[in-house]
View (cartoon, rainbow, N blue to C red):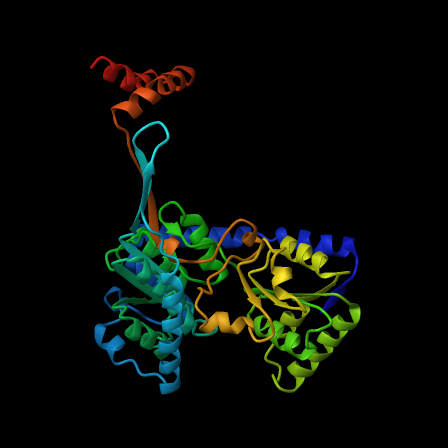
Length: 423
């Protein structure tokens, strides 16, 4: 844990943050997996699953049977939580749907936009270090609301080939019938490229490891991807009105993710020290070491003179999660331009968004919030522009067409105007 009080120290933190890139070794490993899946198909997935997950799968066992999904058992309280969360997530994403539109064009005719869902979407759900049941909901439901007809899901399995029962139950409750198991990165490659057992998708979505993220980066173009996301990260802006224990508990909720980066921006060094004291106490007592040493080492406190400066520092960091606990949260939000998701007030900890609030928790990391949004229904929808000119509209635009075609040395473009004038 470190306290940053100078402009120079903050600039150094920002340089380190934006300098993070996948290693050459990781790029080569992922490239090798892609080549293997392209050449050997399902056999490559089985080989990687045996090598990394110690599970001997055959191609015929990659797909989880309908019976396994339907018979999935999970604790009753988890099933209730899944259903309650699904209701909120579905309601939020229904508000994201856009209506088609047509308007008169200024030169004559009309223009507009229509929206169509992709035919097939693939979702990856991590289950290595922890079974992310909530990620099933956060990725599948936006696709369902968007109107995607065919949705498949892929997730790791244990050494016996079993899929986490919570993930199976979530698939059952969401009526996801197509589920694949095995080595994560090679499954993602298979969904993007298509194999005998796993038909190709149009969009790949969901969180994942560094290898899964790099896989999406390298295969973007073969399919669309939701976003290129890395390890979890969170930032809290707090002033003297914030409760240090709340700030500490909330920042630790994200620091417990492996490889996470966490920040608090505070208006006094005294508050930073109070938060750090609570972090040490909580990790020693109530949380019993839940946050690894590496997670605590990646926690930085930035001391600023006022909340306007706090917003500017937050925008420069562009965090995945931004929580605001101040005397006027809305006033601070008015200055925020870069964040994956924003959580206002002391009663809105980030885990509410992680699990149940409504917006998808698949969000941009690594400062990508400066130019990218999180997963939404738009991830699974294609926008098509529509144009229809009448004879008057054509006459009004014909000269403009001819001028551009002549200047850009594209005579056949201009001839589409000439041939109509002949009529």
